[in-house]
Length: 354
Image (cartoon, rainbow, N blue to C red; front, side, top):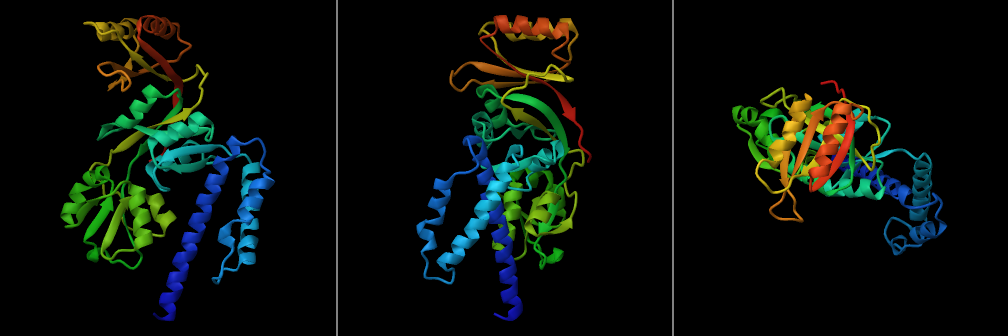
């Protein structure tokens, strides 16, 4: 191994160190809403006296403690700034993070391993907000999110439609003609099927688009690429081989902003969850209320109530504001007759540029 190769290894390690520090600071910020004070001398002493600092390697104990004193000081400074946290599912660079940044670039996006974790962290107060995809223009509803909207007591504060433009990403040293396989989420692979067939690239499924980009950056396999967002190229030091490789340029995803409570009656759209008695025409009678009041429905989804097999809940979106007396009348009627009723919120769409 020559000098150039060694320095390349050092650069990659430095890149990973910064990424790990960022992840540690994210977890530090997650604790800020779970404790009464930024200062916690007992916890700091516990960290600085941990067994990991007793080392016979090149990393001397005093050096480790000096580094961690700086890390703890930076963590406290970040917590003291009290930024708003918004959770999203996936790794950094996911399209959900793109949506979060467009909703409000001053919020701190925090990655979560699952949609359930996003909902739980908002519900427990770790995050002020969560952002989740509710439906895709090509693939339809995101069923896990719809199930959680039925089960959890969170509300919708806003929605945003984000155009989904896929990029083919590779390592800097990989030539386009050498790419033989590509990793990405199965939906992304399907949305880019035409491009992959034309260039004879084998699609290999991965759990997440941004996760595929992160794997490529870490493991650095030869003749391999990932399909992910433009943001992933920046975050993971990858090269954009080709932009907008999706077969349908109109591809977009609708995301909703979650919070613990939304008391606003301002907005152009409302969402509810309800379950009707198990009798013929029960759902039709609810839909007729909207039709008779001249209220336009924009979406209806049915999901099984998992704690009560055989019963279904309906998620309904419709145009209008809660201030509208027609809507108030319809909602009161549905609530009085429904087995389950939940008003998810009155909200507006945040416009995102393509």
